[in-house]
Length: 466
Image (cartoon, rainbow, N blue to C red; front, side, top):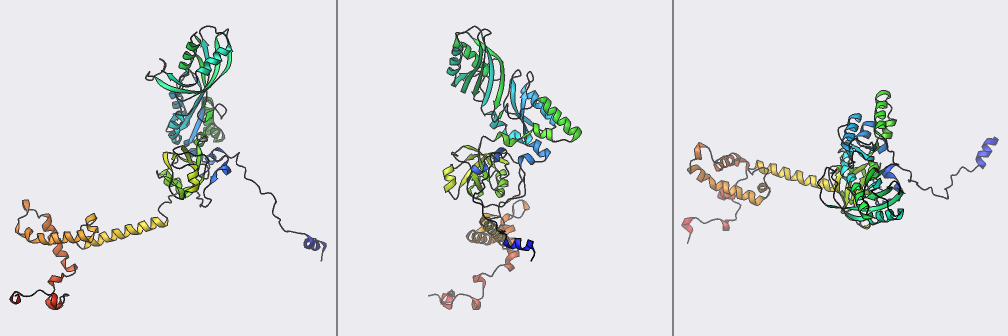
């Protein structure tokens, strides 16, 4: 044998198992799939369906239709004008924004396109963050006095909308979560501070209250929103010129990359929600408004509380709907039946995934019962019962209707029909006569020789009565 053959005989070609099991690292997966391996597993048994796609790999028309823009609103135009310009530039049907900014205010304005407008309500109620320049009407003792004043104006506060706002000026309660003084110039009477607050808080009113608290008076000089819900200044914020240039490049060069950079998937707004992963076979049922049940559950987040808002998602990372949790995490891990979540707002289009309900063993039994009921109705209709009525489904009520129709035969022949038209009982009797050859003979109509009754039970003639 050759030397090569000897080497092959001496070599060990066995594949030995690795001592270290490779771990799945999902911390860099996009959007809702981030840290997917950290989710609790309810079941790993499901059949993937070749429908839908990853949010970042949708075709351009669907990508824009289900997209949002983190826009840096310029000063002077109103929020409504900016949203209308976006609609005209991208040539889409609907646009909406996540919270009104005054004309002079700049910063984050989340613009939702077409299908993503279903998330506008949820984003309008999300928390906001601002950077504000306040002008005091006189000098104060020190910078610490301004910092103490901001710390005092934290928590639930009474606010009345300013005169410049186009809303009803009624007293309301708004919560200030956190404030921080950034810079202060006592000579120019200017201060810069950062504030995290509830949606609907008027920073202009907060500056007036701050001036009153310091005893010198004050008003808002300039304002910029740095975060709106899940979108912030560092999350791919774009300007109006970026949107216009991206659309121009696509129209002239058919380059999609700039449009895909400007528009982001709607799933980027839902990264702060706790997640529930749904089987592909249950997706379309949820899109039609059905509640998510335990058999349709794949994975779920830890620390889910009762009646908490969650996002229902597919295994590809697509958002299906925003739901209300009907079970806690402990119940999800122990129960084998029940409602997991009910739909609050559906996001995905219907029939994106194929219809898969009505194919199980219980559904087949129901279909058999329905078909048997339909065949029985047809049989009763042939034998003279009233078709498609609940009374014809029971033999007792059907027998009563037959007896009533037979006793009304003589009455209907004696009484004239009203207004020259045949009555209902007459019509029923005629149908009865036409169907009589099809009905089984009555025991009383049989001759004595063929009577099914024994001789001892036959009625006696009148001549033999005692």
